[in-house]
Image (cartoon, rainbow, N blue to C red; front, side):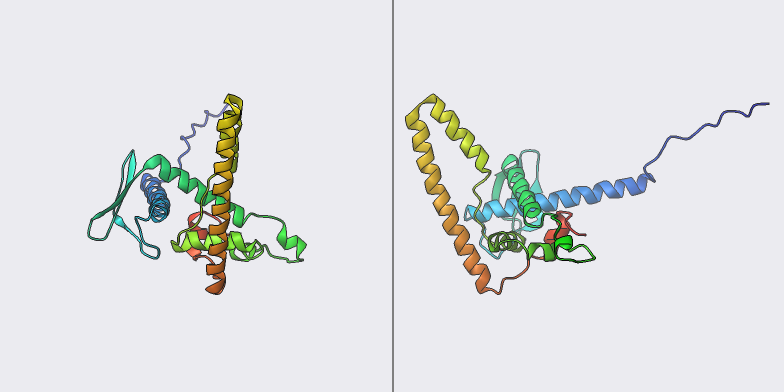
Length: 209
């Protein structure tokens, strides 16, 4: 005598209320990350003073832009969303680079893995100063991916020697300014006692543990 087939209920990811709450938290965290990136752009453009912040509650995220506003609702800047997303990718890439998970614990003979702050202290002063500036809402030099500039230079050289050479001269000048700004940031960071970044920086980019 055979037993009747078992009917399995479809797999669930949890109660609907829990899934809704998780989505809400994900949206809030994503908005907070975009808000931080938008403030970076506004500071670089001189629209937001160093050390001051916009209001997350008053700022408005739309499908095409991120509008930064003060606590009173005054518009600070309306930034294109693609530009804000590019800055967010830069922030995340810099965070990962600065606290990359190399095998430092084994090399140093440590039994337990190092936390992000400890790993960051093994990086160069430039990496540490840059992450500190990003986490504290300070201005920081950002030149974008070098491979993109090199591809543009290569394409211009294929089109004609003169445009490619002009672009390379401009790129060299921009690189010198970038290095100067980075050196000034390191000097300012050292003068403040080589501070660690705000702990929220590691939590936001899931770098804890």
